[in-house]
Each structure stands twice: as structure tokens, then as C-alpha cells.
Length: 162
Image (cartoon, rainbow, N blue to C red; front, side):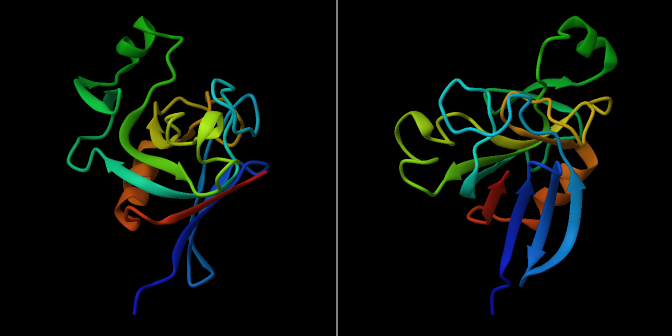
């Protein structure tokens, strides 16, 4: 029998919880969009509603691997690299690419979560978590995103709520 596993992301608490059969099995601090919730293309908001993990990227990459366009660049993030690009919203270590499941809300047209490239991903160790700050994605500590990556599969449901 398959375990009923899902992710719950609470934007007001800046928290991601893993639930199995309705019970919380782990919880992580996150940082979601500084622009708040929203589904529109180019809004730099975190989309709400029902989603799923459509792709898992970075399985065998070391912690702090830098990704651009969902591809590892060959660089490992360091403070020196961060100082060279202080404006970048770094995507590190692992990527869980989300797809919306609600047509007209977060799936299709200008509200499509996957087409907006909304991920759960690692971030530099100095990134403030527990408060909004991203450009739409859900940022996590590198160690936490590695742990989460091992707990979920493609198709795992993800609920994002305000």
C-alpha cells in the first residue's frame, strides 16, 4: 500500500511540512516570494493552490552546486562567487520543479507554475529563511533540500497556501 505523502507550504509561517497519512513527519523553514502570493507570469510571486513535483533535478550533485537553467554549471557556491554576483537569487544543490494542478489558477496561460519556473531549491547558507525574500520560488537550506529530495518522488502533491 502506497503511503499518502504530500507537502504543505504555509506562506504566512514560511514553513514547509512533509505529511504522511495526514501526520507531520518533518518540517523546514523556507523563504518564499518577497512580493507575496500570486500566480501571474512575471509577478515574482509564489503561486498558491494545488501543485505536484513534476521533476527532480540534481540527484548526484554535491551540496552547493550552482544551477542555471536547471543545469549544473560546474561551479560550487562560495562566498567569493556570491560576492561576484550579489544580485543573483541563487539556485543550489537540488531542484524540485513544481507544476500547477488547477487550470486557470496555476496551470495554463499566464498563470502556469511550471512555465514560470517555480522550484523548491537550495540557497546559500547565509540566506535568511523564515521570511519572504525570493523571486517566487521556495528557498531552503542546502542540507534540508537534500533531505527533502530523498523523501519525495515526482508526482508528490504540494499544497501552497497563504
